[in-house]
Structure formats: C-alpha cells, structure tokens
Image (cartoon, rainbow, N blue to C red; front, side, top):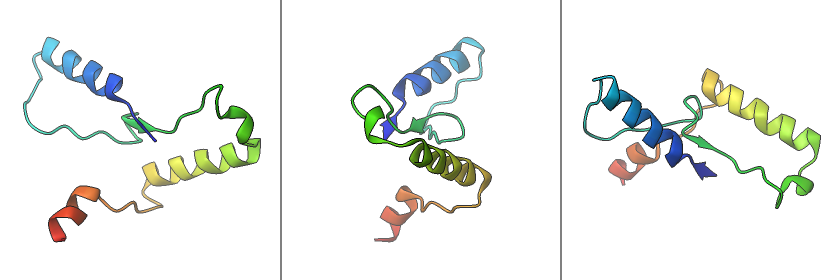
Length: 79
C-alpha cells in the first residue's frame, strides 16, 4: 500500500493558496488518490493482467461503497 503523501501535500498547499485551508486532521482515500498500491519495475512481472483487473475492480467497488472497509481509527477507539 502507498500512502500518497505527495497528493496530501499538494492538496493542502492548493487549499492554502486558494484561501480554503483548514487546520486539523486531513484523511485521504482511494477516491481522492490519497492511497493506492505500488506498481513498479520491481513487482509488475509478478502480477498477471487478471490480477490487476481484479484489484482495479475492488478499488472501484470500495469507492462506490459496494465493499465496506473498516475504519482503522474507529476500530482503535473501540478497543
């Protein structure tokens, strides 16, 4: 999994520049490209086209709300 800090930094700077910045916790997701999975020269040969298609479909289903992913922060508060 990739935590796309570059996306977060860019969005925060953009918000500040446009006068929309608000302090506090900012959470990013698959939908806003704040997290993703790594696909590079080190692992691309390990994955078949079928595997990639299934992962991409799962991403779409998570974004659409068809797959419920537990919220880590909510789970931590309960324990």
